[in-house]
Length: 469
Image 1 (cartoon, rainbow, N blue to C red):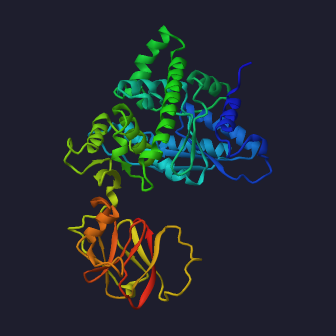
Image 2: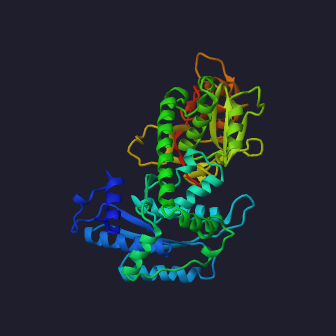
Image 3: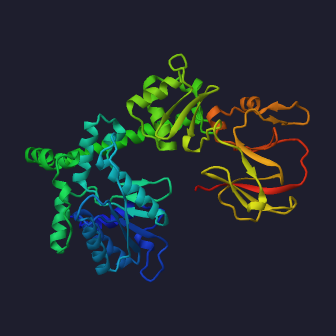
């Protein structure tokens, strides 16, 4: 007996969202504890998913919303958005949409830009959802595998699209139709008289995916009718191999990565060259979201061999991988201040209770009474709460030439020497706010706050907050 598309959908939710819910514990008369967010383009695939999800959610009392991204690339874009809104209104499904703008980039295809913009918009919207539904199917999986093969991808790339993944925000992304063919979805759509839009750009074979879909895969399926399913099986096999590699890398992490997420070069270089490459890919991808090309990977590896690379760091996609005191550190360059050109910030509380220190950091005055209890204040974005002089204070980043008294029993040293002692790399210093009176540092806002032992009078309590412009 063949499984219906509705049962495939229900099974995917139950199998891959354990811990979120099971159908046994959902009752129609209960207020849902979460919502399903459906990425809805208006095409065949997402229209079938909309209809199936709506039938199941209505029956089970699950809140369902639909989210549409208008790329603005077609003259029909607004008509498609209106169509999607109408289809949702017909089913009484809350509908949300956003418009994204794309600019032509020399080193990035329009397909890739549209995909990145789509997922970025979806990630922003889906923060309140626990599960996001995507409508890719088995034919899409075969196309993705062949595209990765064309790019020379390894096992991770050839794993293609996972049915289930968890975003860094905690949101679950689920592709319940990944083992169904487009023909099965088309059959369902016709049986239920569904209406969908046809994107005219799908016929444009200048785009790699369309070229595969329209010219290559039809020839493959004519010769081997089950080729898409076979390719999907190969992708599953690659995913299993990648999972095994990931588990091994996680074991190695315990010995090579320290509590500050820095890599020990001495321990790393004991690995074979092939294992080193796999480990770098795993570390930078899983922790920092950096997917490396072969050229970038080799550049990172050369950092672990100072004789081959005299540069202390390399930049990759807004991050810097820096070699310092036998370790590799990863630095977010967006938060690294150009210390030579950045003027000091005057801390003057008569202008308000918040002072912006950089594009990402704010200093907030909590109380003028240093004895007041601040433990009950709700400050989820606070990195530090500490005391500072009320007047005459400035903030600089790095401040290597400032003096700092770390202990009553030790002489005053320049911060540059203290940074070496604390094992703080040059790029990390550029991220570090330092609060000073004239040429003496009073507080250094490292992850472990450093406070001067100098006698300070007339203090206030402040909080350092992560707060982007």
